[in-house]
Length: 82
Image (cartoon, rainbow, N blue to C red; front, side, top):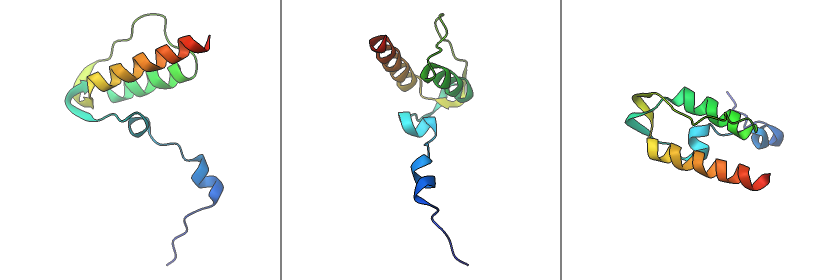
């Protein structure tokens, strides 16, 4: 059986999962991963909610301080673009 690496275009279109892209690690108690991912997708799309964001704390969630860093950085970058 032969394994194909795929076309060059397919490799270039690959987008890493958000946890890999931003370096999120899993903590014993952390932010709900689905909530964080959904918020980041909206934030990158230019539609952050006007109110402060709050995520549920769950077992095996994203490590909180790293998520807070990334969100603060994305907000700063969005402010500079305006």
